Image (tube, rainbow, N blue to C red):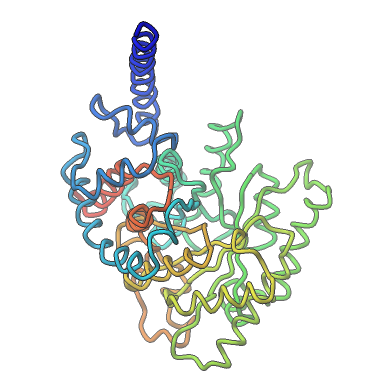
Length: 432
């Protein structure tokens, strides 16, 4: 009996110590990040932030409708509404494929909101006076984007894309150079590879490298027409120029004394409109394989981008099967970047890709009036898009996380913090 009493006392003392440590650490971490942890519920959230508590703990919390008391009513309502919206998609997938297909899987989620979500609006969150393009205004926007990037990283996103580096026609992305400087200064001792920048041309990629960037994404369209219209170069010239920069680093030739950063490839316009012919679809898949093969061994990951919001579950599966059949890349090296025309289609496409073996997905802000590739907003760049849309947002971060968690997939994302973050952004956008 004495031995068992000693063991019980040991567990009690260890539990108290861990709870005190978790509480203090959790409040410090989240005060720096999203500032949502209060005295109630500290241990679960702190452990959740470090992925040491099973995701089922928060999943049970969400599916029973019992939300953390410290969450504001707006965040609780957003969680509840989003749960109700995604529940049918998840239940259909579980009934169709069974729980064993998804249970225990782990995914990496990359947040592109600070870049893709904000690029079509000069100052989406009204951090400066209207139409103010002064250097002081750019600095304020850069600080805001830097802070949002930090918050999202603190929630568990593997990467946060925070800007488009180099010369760009988009006024909203001009502060990206200042964002990079803020990252370099803040993370000078540990590096800032958790934050990435889009680079549209070989010159921009080389400049990003010279100025100390650590993670970049490059874009090459699936078709020559897309590249000529939107990137100003032919597919062959774009591939050659990008690979020249990439090969310099891979072969050990540093540029200005620095090795090149980790680089991912976006294959833009990867999913056609349903109206195009079977032969044109086949030709598009061939073009995609050509682009991806050209960068094989030169980039870290390859991301299939649904630029015009035209992806369907069938289209996603056909493309993935084509890539697998021709041994272009293993599913572990593929990511999916979806835009929303209808939430049901994008969620179904994500589930189809997950079932096929894709485990890396891009997500954006939950707000429906943010986001969209400039090419997608202009019908002249896509002949089969009949009307000009104001916004074509990324697939929602909150919807994606809740869907995956309900399926039994481990995302590593702090759900209450994400709900609070999105509720505050929506409130700011609506002017409240």
